[in-house]
Length: 278
Image (cartoon, rainbow, N blue to C red; front, side):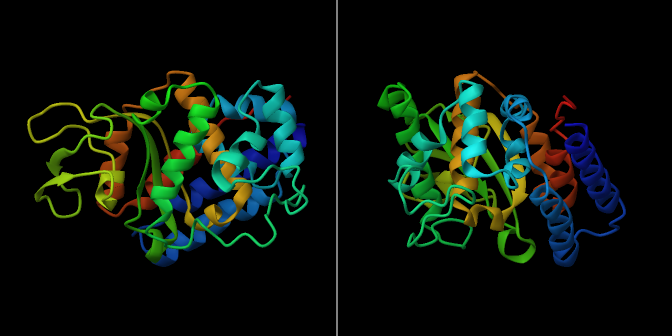
């Protein structure tokens, strides 16, 4: 266990030192930083105790789970009385983790076309359908589930391989809302069928609240190509929602991201996780 903790600490420290040494954020820096952190996490095997602790720390825990096998990760979730990965796979991909097409270690679904982490505009819509389906499967009324939205800032997904995700409680639900669009600043009315609807907004043009951020994380975009990672993302999102969590600091974090300082935000996200040594 101490070895695992040392791995976490050393990887995180090396990543933060690297990010701190970047004078100018850019495409190359972003790819190297993501690879530095991601490669270290592939070597990290989480114990059930660490999984229990990690769930409470929310979406930022997601990259730490990539080195743990599907069945071991699911056992840890069950021990924490969290949403089982089986429920998440069913809601997100329409298959059980017991299905023979699902690799018990990697979680990859044989014959399943890649849905996420591949610059598909439909992915965010599908992800929200899956999230709401999972919430309902856990006992939440369908109408209430529609107030929770998984948002994504894809501004640097292609150029730097980084994405800023947030789960929000949306006060208008599925009703249209009118805001100053993030990319253009132009006053725009967004509806559920539009891509811009899946970005977080603090207030509308009249000053009324639109979104309360439940939780957020900045991650390597390509991690979402793994079915196990996406299913775990859904679990962590639902657990954050169940706990009543709120993350008002998101709005300050979003500013440097929009300004291009994505490495700073990646480091802040990674630094939100502290795993126990035993």
